[in-house]
Length: 257
Image (cartoon, rainbow, N blue to C red):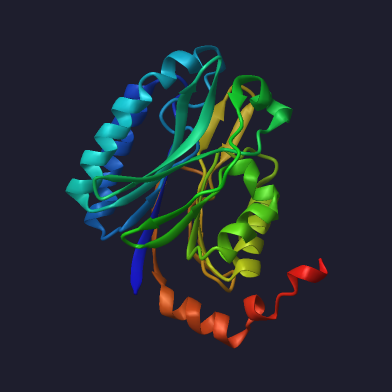
């Protein structure tokens, strides 16, 4: 089975849900026209990290999910991206996996980036997600989760074929972004589709560089620093052949460590 995966990299407008939704709506039509089956959006793509207004902005997420359900059915897409989810005094940073008109699962970001105060504005999730979708088994991590390899390994051991990574990863840590994404693909012998934002928000400069990576760690597609849509084919048979050639999962000794 071969699927086409895309990442929609754009400058998320902080607090401007309507502008972000308009951009994504149009971009989804574009990548669908190019044959995409799976589409990954940036982290908090509907609102950005507009901390003062997050609770209010989160109230719009349900209607946005409803529109994504309609779009995914119309365009025959699996769509992955995170938005603020209402959660009492705080909100969750939640990925919604939408599959051809159905909600295939949600994942609430586990690891909150305390350096920028995420732990003060968000509640953390406490469970991983592996979604069974029409294009295969899709695992999800969000941005800072990338620095915790145990989570990606759990998804791989449970059968993930693709790990999707919505992110808002700023400069100057772009080499960490590239290295960690390739490491997650190589060590777990699976595909990684990572979508970063771009542009500036206050003092933060987001460098883009969204990536699609194969199980050998080779780059199938890479964005620059501007708004872009990248797309690449993911050959699941090639993944199976590579795992048979270097049988890391068969040779694991988890009881020893």
